[in-house]
Amino acid sequence: GAVVSQHPSWVICKSGTSVKIECRSLDFQATTMFWYRQFPKQSLMLMATSNEGSKATYEQGVEKDKFLINHASLTLSTLTVTSAHPEDSSFYICSAETGTSGYNEQFFGPGTRLTVL
Amino acid sequence: AQSVTQPDIHITVSEGASLELRCNYSYGATPYLFWYVQSPGQGLQLLLKYFSGDTLVQGIKGFEAEFKRSQSSFNLRKPSVHWSDAAEYFCAVGYNDMRFGAGTRLTVKP
Image 1 (cartoon, each protein chain N blue to C red):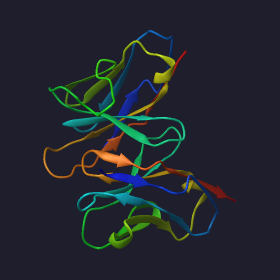
Image 2 (tube, chains in turn brown, red):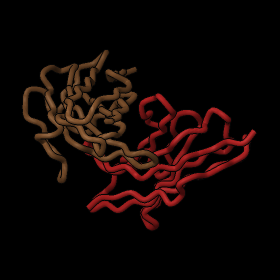
Image 3 (tube, each protein chain N blue to C red):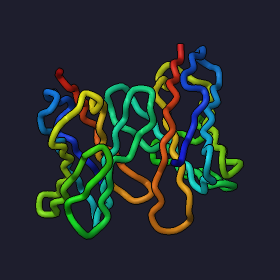
């Protein structure tokens, strides 16, 4: 089956630093990748949608200058949390889909837990 | 705007008992509906989905869900729960950009 990995699985950083999270589709090419954020005991909230080779589309209320998304290849998307603060602490999940038309199942990564001290 | 409501935050059932997890949705058109399961340290796994056709959908791991348009519901069921079913369950609506419910945590008693 389709596998999506994320790295790192958890990260702790100091306030003010930047953190990069990688999302890889291991056995398929992902034309579109999604980034979600999940607060404790809450649901997944879509942050942005990225297509390979183009700028990401951010959901309303998500700061694009703070959450930088790069989808440079068909198997890799990165999310960089810039100048992280404690309120950015959360569980970040990516998903990837293949295909360009119709419905394409999203395959989810295991998530990255970010803790900002 | 599309939205999903899962009324039950936490449900506890005994192993072997039947299970029903509720999901209500709001969607402007014909909904695409999904149920996912999330176990600790694991990614979300798709249990089943509904696009059209037969309103009773069979999924993996013995789960099924029934789409009821009149009630705007898509409840997940399993006739006999196993201890390994303990996890967080999410209902979602949408197409390629999905909206998730708040989730229902399932605890299974031995």
